[in-house]
Amino acid sequence: MWLYRLLLNLYPARFREEYARQMEIGFRDDYREANGVGPRAAFWIKALKDLAISIPAELAREFAQDLRYTSRL
Image (cartoon, rainbow, N blue to C red; front, side, top):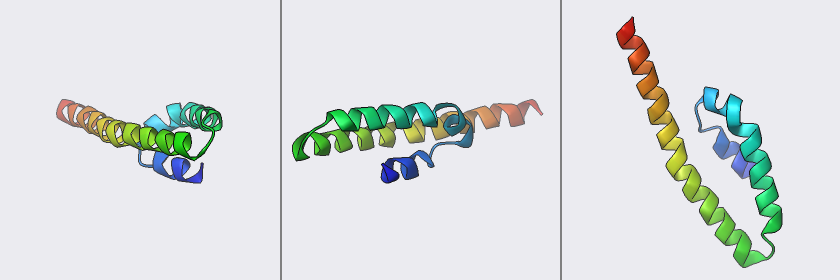
């Protein structure tokens, strides 16, 4: 669980403020359901894959939003 919390810190602050708690709860619940070494390994692979896709996407969205704001100024 500590590793997942650490990885959540890679998301932009605004995203973390709104979604981190729900993501953590969902992760914990799904992790508890994965019993055994194989299912837990598969669960971690899926979770890391999801983070590897969603973190850069959120950073890009945040960056684009900042660029739009800067261009308006």
